[in-house]
Amino acid sequence: MPCKRFMLFLLVLCAAATVALTGCANADQTKGPVATNTGTSARGKIPITTSSEEARKEFTQGRDLNEKLLIQDSIAHFDKAISLDPNFAAAELNRANVLHADVVSSLPARKIHGNPDCRGALI
Image: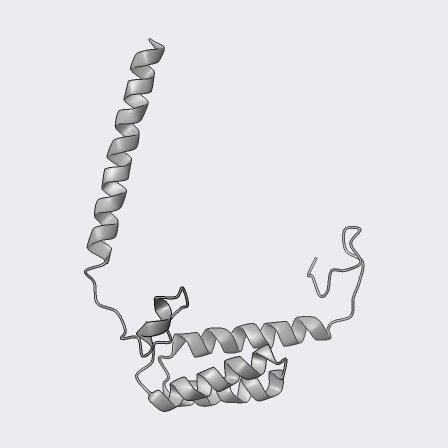
C-alpha cells in the first residue's frame, strides 16, 4: 500500500512539473518592452526598459544619487524620467521606494514589540 501511494505521488509530481514547465515555455513567446541595455541582464541585473534614451539617463542618475543617499536630488531625476516616458514603470517604482524610505527615516524611533530599533512602524 505505501508503495502505491509513493508511485501515485511521483506520478502527480511529474504531471505538475510538466504542466508548470509547459506554461513557462509558452510565457517566453509573449513580447514585452524592449530592453535598452540587454548586456547587463546577462549578468543578473534587471534591464532598464524605456522608449526614451533621455528618460533612461535620468533614471540612472536618480538611481546613482539614491545610492549616495541624496534623496531629494534622486527624486527630481526620477520625476524627470517619468515626465519623459510616462510608461516608465521602473522610474515610478524607484521614486515610490525613495519617497517611502525618506518618510520612514524621518519618523522618530520608538519601541515596538520590545524592539527599540523599529523606525516608523505602524501599529
